[in-house]
Image 1 (cartoon, helix red, strand yellow):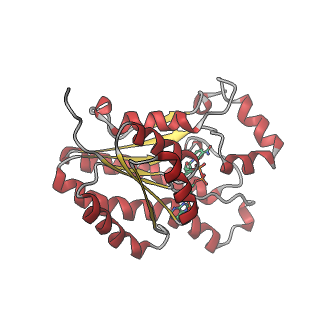
Image 2 (cartoon, helix red, strand yellow):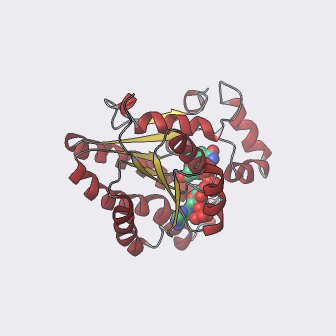
Image 3 (cartoon, protein in one colour):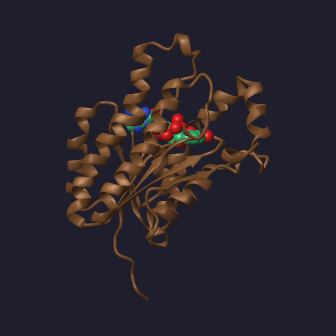
Length: 249
Ligand code: NDP
């Protein structure tokens, strides 16, 4: 029996929701998985659930200056980075005219600028390895217009563009870059957003051909696929995992 070479992944926001499900699939596949978030307790609980291949590390990614030293620490501890999943994200639901510049910037910093900054630092390492897989978590908000989430929509649409631009530049150097666009997945984030807005909830179900919301594990399965050799000829795609929501009538 051949033993599979060691693989190291970083999953930002791996302590909860979709990130936790991705980290669970990775650890089950024997990938050494670093989960990142601001809340040490949340990460500790995730570590208890995920076991020996899970390594919690706290970092506030919106503090951009802390990212290079954070990635240096990871490289010192693990020696390599093979997979980066940019999953950490925040949302803010407000009427367009009530969104302040600070509100807008806060979402952009976490959902976009931090994704750029951590990817840049990780890519420096992946270039020395001449291989790597980066997966960005996008959203339906980049597939069509969603009201009351202006900064979130701007950030996720930029993520799709950045995914393609990174893919054309980095794929010749052995680094594949893809995105997953989750449809409506059951997490705390969507619980809050939909339960307080029955009209929005009805709309979600009406335009989802499969007729039900997704599980976080559906995104975990897609991430595990895109991270590994089964997807070795796939780069630059934005893969909807959405029960057909993005093509629904
Ligand atoms: P959660 O709120 O459960 O998870 C978000 C995670 O991001 C948390 O673990 C949080 O950890 C982490 N995070 C947030 N800000 C920071 C920060 N500044 N630094 C480090 N970590 C941070 O949400 P979901 O699981 O629902 O969302 C995950 C991703 O999926 C997001 O990018 C979201 O936009 C996207 N998505 C979700 C959909 C859904 O239906 N749920 C649909 C489409 C996209 P902590 O609090 O410890 O910092």
